Image (cartoon, rainbow, N blue to C red):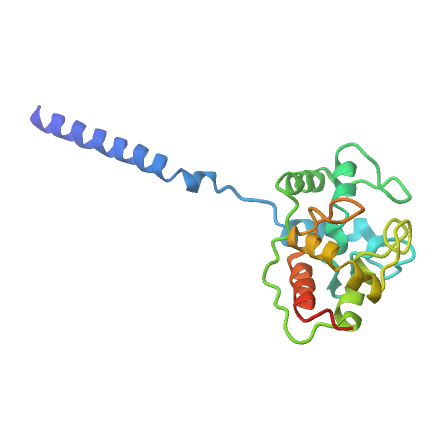
Length: 204
C-alpha cells in the first residue's frame, strides 16, 4: 500500500511538472511554421502557370524571372494584385488564369502573415552606382504598363535624387509607406542596396 502511495505521488508530481513546463515554454508552441516567400511563393510565381512572366518578353507582362535570375521585387510589388486574385478576383492580365487551390492557400496565408521576404542573407558590397545597380533593378521591378513609365511617371537619375526623402521613407518601411502609388513589398536585398546607395551619396 505504501509503495502504491509513493508511486501515485511520484506520477502525479511528474504530470504536474510536465504540464507546468509546457505552460512556461508556451513560446515553443506558438512558434508555428510560416509560409516562406523564397521557398514557397517564388516557386509558384516562376512555374509554368505564370509563363508570360518568365519568358523574357517584358512587353507582354512584368517579368518575374529570366534565365537563372529571379526578380524578387517584381513579385513582391504585386502583393495587392495577388491578394485580390486569390480572394475571388481575376487574373490582372489577359486570359482566365487561376492558381491551383493549394497555391492559392499558400499565397493567402503568406499575405495574412504580412507578405514578408525571408531572404535576408543578401550582402551588398562595393561602390553602388545608379547606372550599374539601381537602374537595372528599377527597370525589372518598377517599369511596366501599370507602373512607372506606364500609368506612373518614369524615373531617371535626377528624379531619384530629387525624391530621396520619399525613397528613404519607402526603404525604412520596406515599402509599407512612402510610395505615392500605394503600399509596396520590397525585398530585403533591395532595401540594403538602396540604403547603401544613399549612404554613398547616390553616385551616378
